[in-house]
Length: 104
Image (cartoon, rainbow, N blue to C red; front, side, top):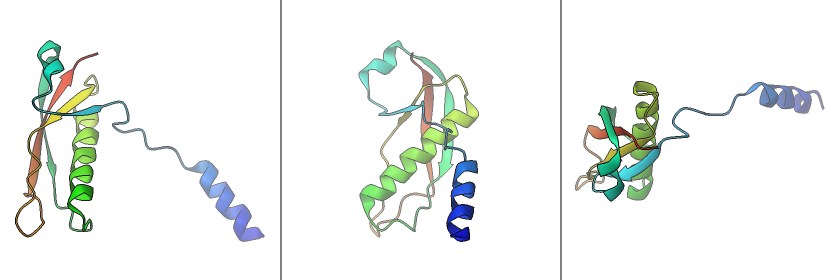
């Protein structure tokens, strides 16, 4: 019983993840970007070897771009990414780039 109480207290103290939750992730050729203000580039490490599935790797890289966009450009609300290159051995390139915009 005391372990359950301690677990509940620790859970109550945890704060929700908020970094990047309001940033949209779009491909670089999204048409609505023409109406947005470009804020600048972001770059993230893309070593996601813990993910075995290529789709999971791409999703993790997008989330990293989104979070870095929120950290570097607090006024940005959209991050555009190019091709998320996954190599022949199923590993991504070392770094991935994105561009942050203010659209809304």
